[in-house]
Length: 74
Image (cartoon, rainbow, N blue to C red):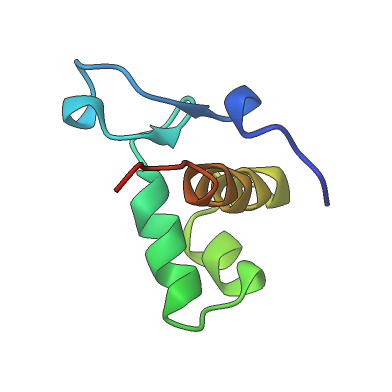
């Protein structure tokens, strides 16, 4: 599923100290990525967080992909 993460993820200094989060929630992207890294399925995450959708999870993965493409000169 292809989604544009900017449609689903926001960062504002007044909520969660600016950590990227799912728009309209206080659920940080790092939490969702942590669940996935721990081996949880998208279905399990959606059960635990009924306010989330498949698009939210896909947006978190797209966000992580985007960050991994960031180039740093060493």
